[in-house]
Length: 105
Image 1 (cartoon, rainbow, N blue to C red):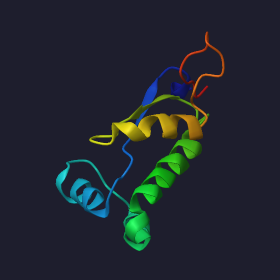
Image 2: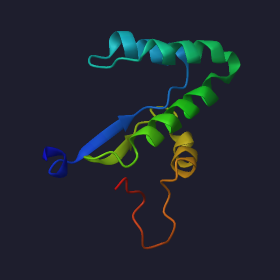
Image 3: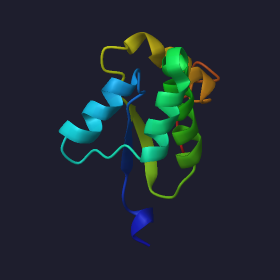
């Protein structure tokens, strides 16, 4: 099986605003933000940052343990301060000092 031989790194960008999501959808080649995600961000109003975090956490949960997926590239452009929270809440933080920061296998 090819998925036993490849190492897939999933890139996730926590969406901080509807404007950011729309920009990525329309202006970043190869990026598609599904309409349900755009609608969730729009409906969130002032809680859009929290909604973006929840969406990122949901995506991480959905890909954990998937065959071939070997890591996550968390790209919090201009929002680096949110990374520790996402890593912790997603269960990716190390449990012991000698463990890697995260493993999806």
